[in-house]
Image 1 (cartoon, helix red, strand yellow):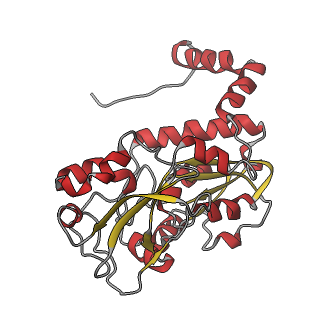
Image 2: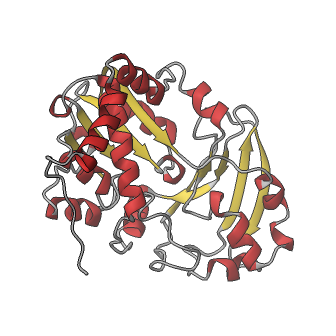
Length: 311
C-alpha cells in the first residue's frame, strides 16, 4: 500500500487502471463506524470535465461516478465506489520501486527507538508487524536494529522485493499468529482500504495483551468539504492540488482525529508511547548518558570514533 517513501502516484501518473467491467464495488454505509446516515458532498461523472482532464488515466468502467459522502455520525469522508480487492492488488502492483529518502529512514530509526523505550526490553524480544510495508524500508530498519520484524503488503511485487532483501514477509495476515505481535506499524494504509474498520479488528487480534498499534493517516484538511462541493467549477490543476486527500479510487477514506479515537475505543486504548518512552529514558538517567557519550566519542583524545572524507 502507501508509505512515505512511495506515496500515492501523482495524478495522471502510474500505470493505467484496470479496464474490466467488474473491477469496482459500492459502499452503502460508512466504512469506519458503520452508520448509513450520510451527506453527499460530491457526485460527478469521471468521464466529464474537469475531472476527466485532472485524472488523465483511463476510466476503469463506463458511467462511473466520483461520489464522496460525509458520515453524519463520525464525520469520516469516504468514496462510494471503490476497487474490488483483486483489482486493488493489480493496480498497486504497477508501482515502480522507489528508494527511501534519508529523512524517512532517520524517522523510522527514531520511531523504533520509541518502541524500544516503551517496551523496555531487548529489541530481539519485541515482535513488529509492518502491515502495508510498501518497499520494506521500515521493516528493513527494524530488522537491522535487531527487532523480530515481519512485513506484509497487498502488493505481491512489494512482498517479493522485501524477500529479495532478506526480510521476513508473509503472504496473508492469517500467517501471523493471533496474540503474537508487540507492535503493529500501520503507516499511510487506512486511507487506501475499502473496509478500514474490519482491517483494524483483524489486526487487533494479532496483538499481545499490552501490544501497541500505530495508525498514521492523513488528517482531513480544512476546506476539503467545500472543495468537493465546488468540483464542477474547478480547473484540473485545482482538483489535483485540493483533492489529494480523497483522490479518486486511491485515497478512499479521509479521517478526523476524533473519529479515529472514538470508533476504536471499544477495541484499543489511545496511548502516547512517545511520552512514555521519554519517561523511561529519564527514569533510567539515560538522556544525559546518551548526550555525554556523543560528546565523549567525538572529542575525547583517546577514543577511536572517526570519520574521514576525500579531499
